[in-house]
Image (cartoon, rainbow, N blue to C red; front, side, top):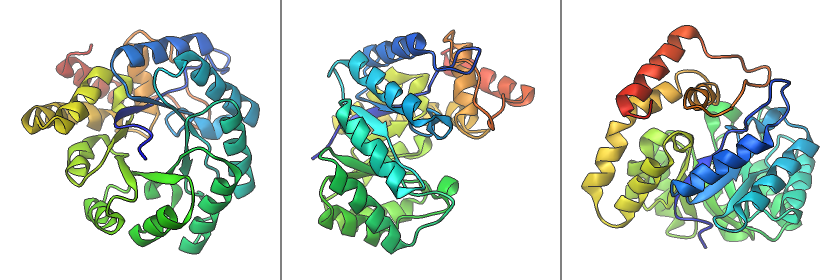
Length: 294
């Protein structure tokens, strides 16, 4: 059932000076992620600034990632929307260009009911034949997929096989895991809570942190899965300062700044996101130095 087990990267979208997508640099980043052991590429998610892409850019970016990875690891395409019709359209096109799976965020701003969330995922599922990961991130969408709703969707809607849980509420994740009883794969959407989620039966993480430290994130999950809990714990705890810095401003502002510091041509952000403040940039730089990647 699992699309992947381990560390998937919620990959940034590098931009040229004119704000267009820098595909050459995206290719370099994908290659370095694969070399670092990343288990899946998640393209056009929140970290990839998908909300500021038009449909043509969105699908072109997904196709580029599919072609570049060449089936070495799965490519999961972010295709959620606050408009079900748009989400269905993007899902169908992502499948057509070869995506291995979909990451579908809950509708944002218009705040669907639990029944509306069920219908949203059913409508997307009815339009495609590839696995779907629900994405629960209430802090950004204003909507929370309740555990009961997530399990109902998993049991009754074809193709929905997993959830990216970014509520930050470990009690909710525990209840979800208990109710699901294995019918739904759970991925951490919070880099500082990967190990707690793995301990509840999670399959891995869809990670922002992995952009700057793919080998570390992969090794943490792999170590846990291999039974070396102490090593996994050490990797998780050593990264807390860095993870905090990567989220000291709204994602993906800090991670794009970090990638630029590491020598990638990540470029700037699309409005309405703005560049990181000098104070937070210095905080991030210090955290990266302390972590040993700068």
